[in-house]
Length: 347
Image (tube, rainbow, N blue to C red; front, side, top):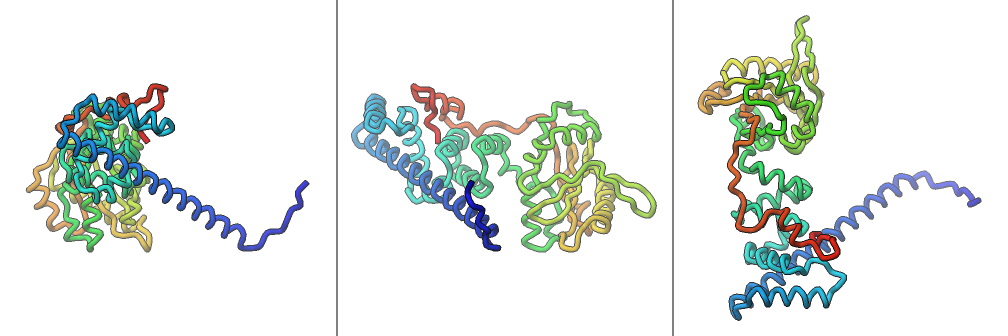
């Protein structure tokens, strides 16, 4: 039996720190390998582009190149004809090698194929790439946000944040709200009432949190508050980890009306008095309505003292889906990149 050696007092904390350092080093190494692979793919694609332009390379030459590369590097995946064509498209989309050293160079190749296949605009591609890097999106989450036009909807809610919150919190709070919110995952009709929508949102809380965005933590529904001996109930209560404040969400199955702000303002005052901690920022309110008149909403919020945003929700998908480029879908890409042995070439 091995002898039990008494450990120094600081051994445990030091071991924890050492594990964290090793984990961070592993992550840096993985990112470095990925960046080198993306750069290699860009260089191959650039070479194909140049030779096609200079020497008129056709598809047969690329097919032969794919075969020769696979023969020369049998242990490496990713040299299928389809993937070589995507390397060419990648180099064509990003003509400057410096771009590979930015956000797209930090993303796995599969993420870059999603960006190529689903977004035409280079600026929008880069914006989604940067967000994916910043928030650590998986490829499926990247697809989800692109298809639902996340960046087009962010920051579009009507609010008075610039008047009621100090910078930079006002900008962060505005960015945290969308307009419209898409609740097409609920499986209920357009005429559903407030309680039915609320029930469905809580039932699908994971999808709801994904739609709300990074930073939202669910606290509860129909949260009771006692004010002056009377009971009141908040539809949905969240806490935003980045803003460090409570967020009260009120659902209205009707068009926005100015009087809605009075009720929400009361709830914000009650949460600030009863729940808000010493280090919490002022509570934010969000009205989700079936529709709104933007001018009416702006006027209604102008003299409200608490920070409130107003946005629409949609129970069915109604945003246009014109993001597809001439490249195949990600499913088609994956199928095309599958090697003969059944393994995929996507890192």
